[in-house]
Figure 1 (cartoon, rainbow, N blue to C red):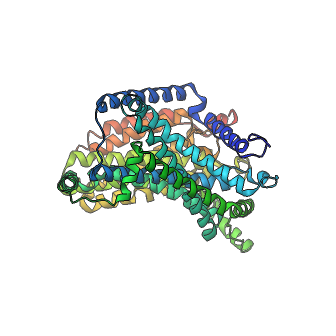
Figure 2 (figure 1 turned 60 degrees about the vertical axis):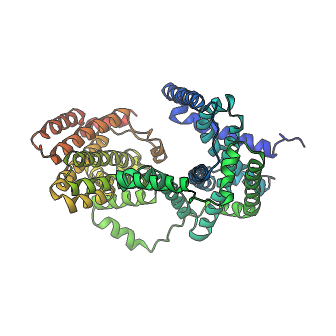
Figure 3 (figure 1 turned 180 degrees about the horizontal axis):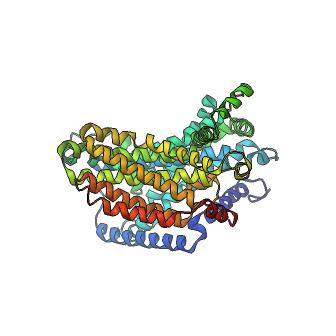
Length: 516
C-alpha cells in the first residue's frame, strides 16, 4: 500500500486540503477580483513592512535577558490562546457542520485515523493564517542577517499542534458535559470571548487611563533593569526556539507532536461516538402537548412571530458570538464615556455617544437581515392568514430587542454621570437601529442564515445605506450631546431624506422579492 493510496493519511489530508481551498474560493475574498486585489495589497504592505524590519535589525542581535524572555513568553501565550479560540470553532465545525463524518465512519477507515487527519487539517488551517502574516514580515530578516529567526515558523507550528490538541480535548469534554448543541454554542462564545479579551488588552491604555498605563510599563521596565524581574528558566524556551537554537526548537516541536498524537489516539473512539450522536441529537426538549403550542398562537400573529424570531436568534451560536463580540467591544467605550462624563470632557463625551449610536445601527442591520431576509420558510409565511405587515413588524421588533440589551451597559453608565447625554444617546441609538431595520425591510435580499458570518447575503446598497444613515444619526447624536442641539437638525434632516429616498411600498418589496 503506497502512502497516497485511498484511505491513507496523505490521501485523507489531501481531501481536507481540497475542502479548505474550496471553502476559501467560495468566500467573497476567494471568488471576487476585488477580494483578490485586497489580498494582494495586504501582501504587498506586509512585504514592505518586512523589508523595513530587516533594514532596522540588520547587524543587531536580539538579547536574551529577563525582559526579552518575559515578552517572548507573553507573545507565545497570546498566539497560543488565539489559535485555541480558532481550534475550538473548528472542532465544533468538525462535529456539526461538515456532514461527512457518517460517510467516513461507514467506510473501512478507522476512527482514530479520521480524527488524526481531521485534527491535522485543523492545525494546518490555523497555522496557515499565522504563517501568511509572519512569512512576509520575517522572511527578509531571515534572509538578510538573521537566519536563525526561521525558528519562529517552527514555534508557530508547535503552537498550532498544541492548541489543536487542547481544543479537541475541550470540545469533547464540553460534549460529554452539556451535549452537542450546547457544545457548539459554548465553543462559538468561548472563541468570541478570547478574541474580545485580546481586543480589551490592546485597549489597556483606554481602560486604565494614560497615566496608569504609563506608570505600569515604567515599573516593569525598572524591575527588569534592576534585576528584580526573574522569570523561571523554562520561560526562556520560546525565545531561544524563535532565535533558532536547535535544542529548544526540537523540544517544543517534539512536545507538541507528542501531545497532538496522544489526544488523537485517546479521543479516536469517543470522537466517532460523539459525531454519530450529533446526527440526530439536538438537545431539544420534548413537547408537553398541544396546549403549549395553542397558547403560543393565542396572543396573535405579532407575538407568535416575535417569539419565534427571538427563539431562533437565541439558538444561533454564530449569531450570539458575533453580538457578544460587539457587546465586549463596547466596554472600552463605556469606560471612556464614564471617565469623560465625570471629568466634564464634552468633546470626547460626544464622540463616545456617536460611537454608541453608530454601533447600534450596525448591529440592528445585521439582526434585521437575519430576521427578514434569512427566513427559512418564506412561502409558508406568504400563504399564512397573518398580514405581511404584521409579520414584518414583528421581525423588526425581534431584531431591535437584542440591540436594547446590547446598549444597556454604556447607556446605564452614561445615565449615572450625565443623564441629559444619556437621553440624547438613547434617542440617537434608537433612531439609528430603527432606520437600519427599515432599510432591511425595504431592501430585502433572501439568503441563508449561515451567510451572516460573511454578511454576504445583504444587498450592497442596503449595507452602504445603513452605514451612511447610521453615520449621519451618530453625528447628530454627538452634536446634541456636545450641547448644540439645533445644529444636530442638519444631519438628522439628511438622514431622514436618505430614508425617504430608500423607502419602498409593499408592492415594490413583493415585486423585488419575486425577481430574486
